[in-house]
Image 1 (cartoon, rainbow, N blue to C red):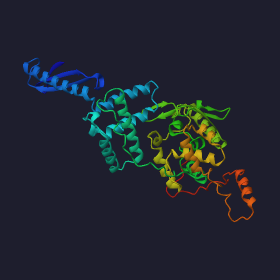
Image 2 (image 1 turned 90 degrees about the vertical axis):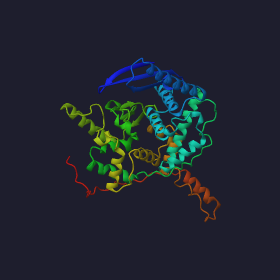
Image 3 (image 1 turned 180 degrees about the horizontal axis):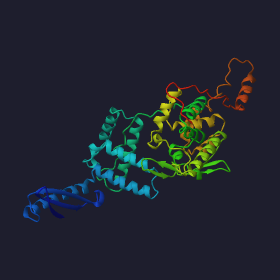
Image 4 (image 1 turned 120 degrees about the horizontal axis):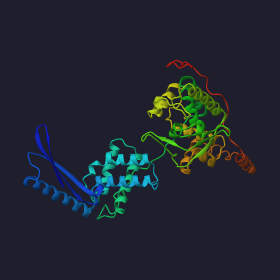
Amino acid sequence: MAQKDFIKDGIQKLIIYIAVNCKEYPGGKIQRKKTVTGIAKGSPKANAIEREMIRETEREAAQREAVGTNWEALVGLYELWARDEEKNGRWVQSKQTLFDAVRSLHNWTNDWYKLPAANITATDVTKLFHRMRAAGVSETTIGKMRGDIRKVFEFGLLFDHIRGVRNNPTNGVTIKSRKRMRTEILSEDEIKKLLSYAKSYEPSWHPIYAFAVYTGCRNGELYSLKWSDIDFQERLITVQRSYNKMFNEEKCTKTGEWRRVSICDPLWEIVLELKRNHDHDLERGACKYPGYVLPRPGVWQNGEQARKLREFCEEIGITPICFHTLRACFATELLRRGVDVPSVMRVGGWKSLKTMMHYVRLSGMADKGITDPLDYRSEDPQATNRKLLSAVGESFRSGGGMGAEIIPLPTRKLPHR
């Protein structure tokens, strides 16, 4: 407890600080302060105010000890615990995922702040989800919110921050099934057109798009790719780090594991050109980002690569996609060319077979020709069997062909090169 007097704008003021121990509050103490005017330090009136503040805070501490902490404090305790778990390598989610989850909890559940967490019911959770739907929030985001609320309550029950209840209020609260719609990806001709037009009209973005479709690297992995990651003798790229813009730091890949990607002939030409330009700029002292492979347009540094690519796709007349979809294009095109699923997963850094099966469906490689053996017109009973054997032994490969010819865009002039 403390009292501190000071003068501000010629007026005598007094600040009274109090602190009461409470393990159900972040930091283990409930701290309060109050500023009063015209009361002397240590006077009977100042002491009376201090005693009243102590009594109110002790009542709050007793209530917290009886039913547990309120929701605001519980989320704060959960965040401190989760960050400590993440720091010590015991947290399965990334730092950014945890940050987004806590921020979302604060944004959507601030109406619960003063409620004891033990008093929050399934009805409160249901009302929250209705409010989120009314605001246009997707069912996927609502599903994540339900999972985050569940985790906070499980933490509170496990560490005895919630008392008097044993049921998680998210139990029994259902959400609409999240149906996965078909993702729009680029066809082979559209990929060729994207790279051709980017080379002519967006020369700084061309190598970035090329690396994305030829390696399947994620955005952060491309941004942090260094020349030391490229083996020029074996023509291999080691993908071992990723850039996180939110925290402005380089970290390990999303899966936490490194992988190696072979450099195909078209990409090798781009790598050699980038290396020549890098070494030339380095010699004359004009290299802005020494050590890094790809150029860094300002839009990319600002994290607006998805908008940039979508607008460029619309401008050249192909399917508008976001930047991450280039990774899907990489997977589907390999699958269409007969590369087996385990190899695609390994080189692309996928660990989930469920995610990979989505790309298998997009590629159509598992569907093409399945119904060919069906022919009810035949009178020869052996014809169907012969057709079945033929279909099983058939190898499907995508056709060749050159990309579309570069047609001048009416929206802009070709940049000087």
